[in-house]
Length: 421
Image 1 (cartoon, one colour):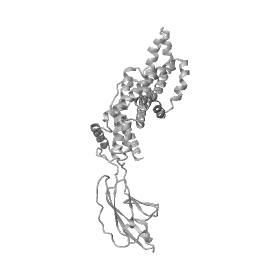
Image 2 (tube, one colour; image 1 turned 180 degrees about the vertical axis):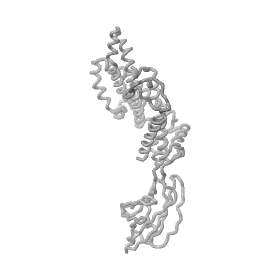
Image 3 (cartoon, rainbow, N blue to C red; image 1 turned 30 degrees about the vertical axis):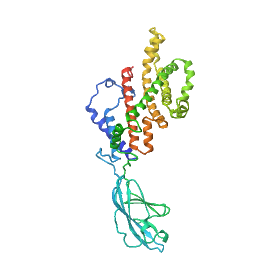
Image 4 (cartoon, helix red, strand yellow; image 1 turned 45 degrees about the horizontal axis):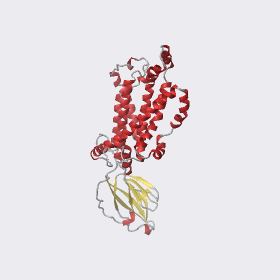
């Protein structure tokens, strides 16, 4: 919750500084700047590069700050490390009480430390020592070295003066102390606000893992082979889906017979998630490459079909009438009017389909694959190698984003009239 609130605060502050202060010193001179009305005009909305840079830096800084990264200058409060202590009060069967101190040494996970040496003290309750790793907890049988134990009717009744009973817990300056139903103490030192590396490693750990796997490989294949096979499957499935889906969408948009014949099929399959088809595809095509490509083909097919159909439906009828009035044939109307005006919708559908294909290929590789980004993530998760999991997710996102940028460039080159007509 706190990282989210910080993110919102940075967003609002950046918006106020960039839009309210710095923008007045920069004048845009392009096609959009010449428009008198831009609100509601989708073509006038362009990504603010300053906002993009600040957004990425904000996510990186929050990631580093809440994981204790050495790459960022500020950090959220981390887990307690060092020596601390708390006092427990033991009560004997006759009602007499005695205090003893538990000396705790909290160390960083993976380090080796020696337990502190303390004198047991006087009285029937003796001082104890415990070592515990940060973010972990330790069981303390407080009466293990006491003169009077639970067998003698003695029991712990308070921690640092706060009453405690079996099943209860108290918060002290040294951390949280809970009592099990059998009377054993469970001590957990303060965890702070940073994430434990097993849940979210710092950025440098992920980058280091990228270099390691790039050099040595993972699960008998190099990093580039894993990513290359995933990319090959996505591109192959997407292209097949586009080759079939776009003509089918055009046919549905131009012919009432094709629309009536295929509309129930398309509308039935459109809401079915591709992941639901994995068992069926495995039964039909096995766990080899053909099965994965068929699954990706089905993931892209319906999206591209609907995009092409929507593109045809969105063509202004006035342009069609103008072409016919000039003597154009049906083929010329299709080539010079319908196809050019439907390309923006098709490119939008292609970008959506590519994203769906990436999500589908990772899931398909989770089920059955010897190589691929999804397989790498799956195997790493079994061994709680979170840095490899995050590395795979980031690389998939970078590749997907790169493909999306290429599609945007292709759209800008092939459809320069988008939003200007």
